Image (cartoon, rainbow, N blue to C red):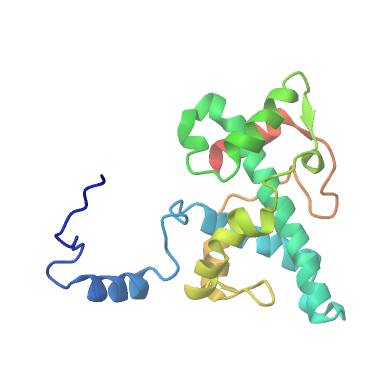
Length: 195
């Protein structure tokens, strides 16, 4: 037969877990084992800034439509950033892609299949099956809201998020107005090495 242990397993013998979790949630709201790569936060704030510039709040759209337009820009920004980080792996090593969501399954095969090209189109990359849910957008959205970086319901930067976006290296190689325009690999590598 199968033997079972009669002793209960206690993961919190001193009773500190509740206080620890409350303190952790206070200091790092939304932080989980999935949200362990801090560079996602400024990247997403920079992506939201690009979305705000292209689709300002007073554009006259219904809130849901305006948010949808901003979300599309943010989705494309995450994709171009993932490609740039993947290309920077050649010079920066594994740290360039450490913790990058979808790298092994989507970004690396995409870069391998386009190895002979001098330029890339982000529209040809499907980053994760459902990027909005499982990519950086879904994984870090709650944290951005809880840390008061972003108003997630409207995809609008708050003052702290704006400061965080300022820390992210902007790029002139990609434009939200023309998201699927081909971009030279050398320009993406240069940006990827900085971000």
